[in-house]
Amino acid sequence: MKIAVFGNSFLKERAPKAGQILCKLQSLGVELLIDETYFHFLKENGGVIEVPVSLIMDEHFSADIALSLGGDGTFLQTAMMVGDKGIPVLGINMGRLGFLADVTLEETDKLIEDLMSGNYLVEERSLLQIFSNSSDLTFNVALNDIAVLKRDTSSLININVEINGQFLNSYQADGLVIATPTGSTAYSLSVGGPIIVPDSNAVILTPVAPHSLNVRPLVISNQNEIILTVTGRARNFLVAIDGRSSMISNGEKLVIRRAGYTLKVIKRTNSSFFNTLREKLMWGADKRI
Image 1 (cartoon, rainbow, N blue to C red):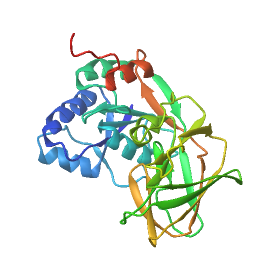
Image 2 (cartoon, one colour):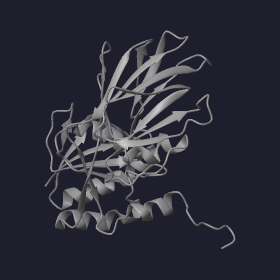
Image 3 (cartoon, one colour):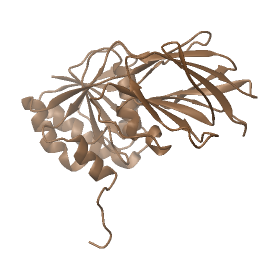
C-alpha cells in the first residue's frame, strides 16, 4: 500500500504523535510519500520517521490513499492536491472541530488496522468549479464553498445572480456563499445557512449580512449553472475558494457549476454524519447533567 501524507505545519506539539502514526504505518509495510514542507516540519519538531521516504514536491504523485493530519483546513488542502486523481482521502483530526477530519487521535490504532484490512467505507463528495470571463483563477475547484465578498470598504456590494440564464436576485450584502453539502457545516452555516446531508445533490446560496431581512438562504440542484456579476463602489472584490482568496474586478462575470469529478472520502464503517452532527455541534448537551 502506498500512502501520500499531508499535514498541518503549525501545530508543533502534534509533530511527535504524527511521527508515531507514520512509523506505525511503515512498520506494517506501507510505502510513505510525504509532502516536502510537512516532512521538514516533522523533522524539526520531533516527528521521527524511519527512512527512506519519498517526498511530494508538487501535484504530480500517485498513491492508494491520501492521509491528512490536521484539521479541516488541512483536509481541504489535501483535497486540492489530490484534485481529479481519484485517490481516497482520510482525515485524522489534529486540529479543532474536525467535520472533515473526524477521526480522533485515540482512534488511530484501530483505524490503521481497518485500513490494512480494507475495512472502511468510501463516500463521494461533489465539488464546485468556478470560471471567470477575465481573471485567471489558479485554484478554481472547491470542496466546501465559493464566497464572493467585499474587500476593504464598509459599503455593501451588489451580486447579481442568474440560474441557468434566469434572473434570481440582486443581493445587496457583504457577500454571498455558494456551498456544497460538505460545506454546509462551514462558512454557510456560520452565516445562517441550512445543514445538508453529504449525499444530497444540492448547492446552497447563503447571503452574508444582506441589506434586506427577507432575503433567505436558497437550496437548488447542483445540476444548475450559477452566474454571478459583482458591482459596487470598490474597484475590486474577493472570491474565496475553500479559503484561498483572489481579487476580481468590478463587473466581472463568474460562472459556477458542479465539477466533472468527485472527491472520495474514507470513513469508518461505524461512522455516521448524524453522530458527527450531535458530537461536533453538541446537540442535546445539557450542562445540568
